[in-house]
Length: 206
Ligand code: MD6
Ligand code: FE
Image 1 (tube, rainbow, N blue to C red):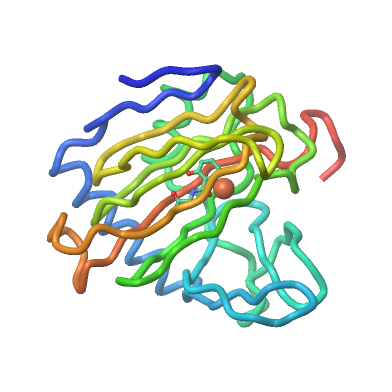
Image 2 (tube, rainbow, N blue to C red):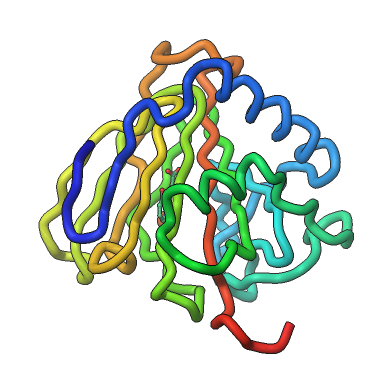
């Protein structure tokens, strides 16, 4: 287990059986809330990653900006609930007394990446972000509070769970690339990353 400033990586947290069970759940989620391709605010440049969400709020990005919203941007229906098996992972590792409101699903195909960014659209930054990786390994890069700060990188493999809390919560991070051939869990060198977050401050009106 790697540990620095509130960042913890639990390598192999989910064994292969639990990874497959989780993937089955996610296939059902994607049937209810199809993957969509977000675009960058202002420029409208498409992300290489496709996304969907679970929970009372989901993260979206379009020409007008980044935000959390209760409904799918294309179907207009509420996001599916976060399955209990996923909530259990949060309860076991987050060290935070309130359940997450949002679970963002990122789907990478080979060649997809995620540029350096900060998760700063949430009000409740005392809560950590919990990330679960499935499928091909992602090369994860993390730096400091400023974009120019030095970075380090490590691999997130299928079944790894990472908690980004404390001083690491608002650090810049991204996925440089996916390692082809590193897993057969998903077809075509795919990778799925789930990030569980608190959005609103506990006690805020819904
Ligand atoms: C990914 N993850 O692993 C992208 N953000 O595909 C993130 O952007 C991320 O893993 C905040 C906390 C943990 C993460
Ligand atoms: Fe992030």
